[in-house]
Image (tube, rainbow, N blue to C red):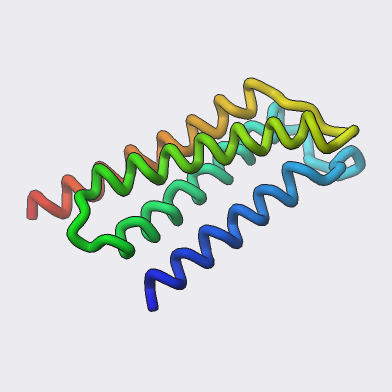
Amino acid sequence: MRKQLYFWAAVTWSGIISFFCLIQLNNVPLGNVTNIDKYVHCFFHFVLTTLCFLFFKSKALNQADKKSVLFSFAFSLFFGIAIEIAQNAFTVTRRADLLDVLANIVGASLAAILIIMLSLIRKSK
């Protein structure tokens, strides 16, 4: 049951990321926060990496946390790059941005670091 929940949560979150990264957002008031889109990318991929980890971890209970973290990070990274390519190829109002990819990497890295730290804390008890 958990495995399916984590799977659908990750798929749904991937859809949310795709939607917001591929629609036109020219008239959306985002406030006065400098580079707010980079924070959004970071948040998107922090959550995506976490949800993917929960899915991969529940899928193979005997698998080490390291493998699940690695697969989750890699999926988030490749998904983020694919979205940037899709923005460039399939939209006229959006363009690929290397800084978005870097923000994605930061979000995925923060999630991986947190997961590893929590895993180490859990093992030390």
